[in-house]
Image (cartoon, rainbow over all chains, first blue to last red; front, side, top):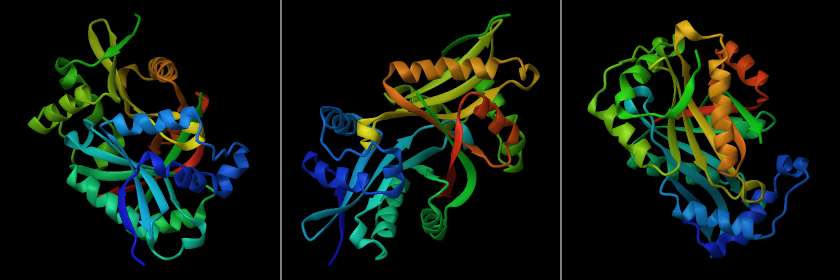
Length: 151
Length: 151
């Protein structure tokens, strides 16, 4: 079965939220609601109206089975180079290991290239060793430390 | 002398570009033009017109002596939490170690909080040990690996 990639619709939210919650590290946080709260619905609206952010899904046999968020960011560094930020990458648990994640990443990398980006970047929790191998296989260099401050 | 923080103007570009270039790691890339090329001017225009990105400067005695870029990103994770991304942080070399960087970070952190962000994040080259200590002192956790793919 083929996976096709398209921008998310509001009706995809239940499938996307279920994939975001179904994650070992998210579960350690203790706060993994799959509920479509007004805040989640508002966030979807903000992504839709944000000219820089795109929420992508992979669809297979009529089901949403993968997702990620792409944000394109202008900047002065490296001679005025745009960069793309990838967040919240997920493939449905029962469909991992079939190249769907790699195909989704390839799709949005091409999207970033078309938008004029010279770099794609992401951060991955230090405990996600499989994810680091996955991204390294796609050509990513683990050159940086990803630092977070909770407000 | 006090440092005041404000959004950058196009006339600040020479000072900002000089600070971006005056950096040990940027210099190892071999490509550190301080020139205000059409691409740099276009990138400044994109930052200005991007509703999510803000280029900040610190000014002291009429001179621009610090800079960073803040980008506010909506998202579905953590119940629809917005996050802020910090990029291209610089303080002029002769004025480091006086708390100007910390004051600039505090300023934009407050800005991110007012914009409804639940997190500020950044990546820092693994070789920047002083920078990691600086951010850890500000409360940042080095919880992630920062991965980059050049296009």
